[in-house]
Image 1 (spheres, one colour):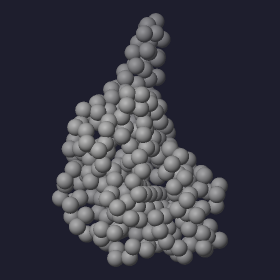
Image 2 (cartoon, one colour; image 1 turned 90 degrees about the horizontal axis):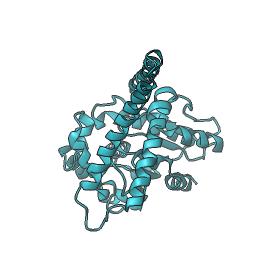
Image 3 (cartoon, one colour; image 1 turned 135 degrees about the vertical axis):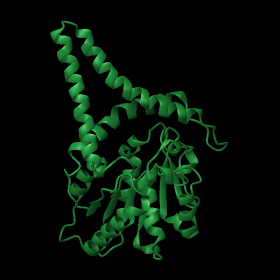
Image 4 (cartoon, helix red, strand yellow; image 1 turned 90 degrees about the vertical axis):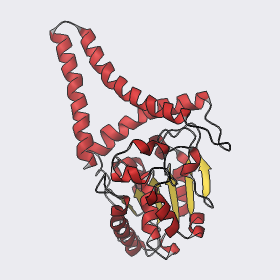
Length: 297
């Protein structure tokens, strides 16, 4: 579903750009073409700037000072360049470029489950999947459906994926999850009394305690990610406190989607800070990749 929606949006933007160029050419007014292109890029940039402005204006936590100006500018520019690659190329057109990899000789080699976040699909992980296949590491990358349903609806898909990895490798898998995907993993795990079905969980920019920005979301899963939501409180009550020690939680002071900063951490987990990097681009950082390889080893 997400691939189709993003494909439609991308093609529509391309059509508008071409239409602007043609109108400018026919009317001998090249400025029209520039205006059309600027409107598309400017609209996206304005939306991104609003997200960062809301993040910066949010009251700071005493233990977490805000980003420095250079960090913030670097994060904004990085997300401005990186997000279109994900949302206008990888996810709409190449989400099936790298199929799941469960070779017959996978026994005894620990596998990896990859879980994306809201408004994403498995195409988010394409660079990871390419490298994993080159290294011969078994993996399964999920598409969470329905895209805008309840996070509880993703539990059966996660269970099936973990069973596939267990059967192929005879070992508990490592799981890496971005954003809402980390909550989907916790929701699945809350239904299990066996902590050892997961070897290690790595979350990247996951709103473990909700995010302030979710107040503007109208979908079921967005409402569940609101700060202090009934769904989050119920999830925390179902989890054994010691389970957090099995998590590595990457979080950032320039995350324009999940804030305040501490909401992406878990008490008792190995919480690691990524400075000067925004929400989606965190998946391209070397630190989470290195931690996943370490857990797989």
